[in-house]
Image (tube, helix red, strand yellow):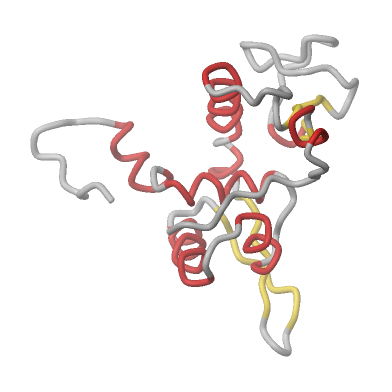
Amino acid sequence: MLGREYDTQLCSIARSLEVVGERWSLLVVRSVFLGARRFDELQEMLGITRSVLTTRLNRLVDEGVLERRPYSQRPPRYEYHLTPKGRQLWPVLHYLMRWGDEHYPEPEGSPRVIEHRGCGGHPDDHLTCDRCGTRLEGRDLRSLPGPAMTARGLTTPRIPATS
């Protein structure tokens, strides 16, 4: 992680990376956007160790990107939901996905396709639906398996575990 003190620079990107710059942090946020809410779902989707996932979830909760909501009293169990602050990350994830699709393409095509729930259109470069012209937010969209995932018989992203 970067240091918390910026004696030689004033940089919003560096401050942001303190929260979401570690590899697993953005992948956790992505997985919550995709609908994984519970610890075991996140661990399965990511293929991440329990200790790394616990650390990342705690950090994202402490920073106000995610919130924990109880779903079981005995034993105590929690779901993780995006806060308004966390939902503001969807354009970052969307542009990273598009950048990866362009510069590191899969032979079969994109792993995921983002679709406007309202009409089936897709976000354009300005985060507007290319079909109906609606300005899109994360809650307006659904993520579907794309050609690469379909060709491999997958329905959810699976990332090899490393810490």
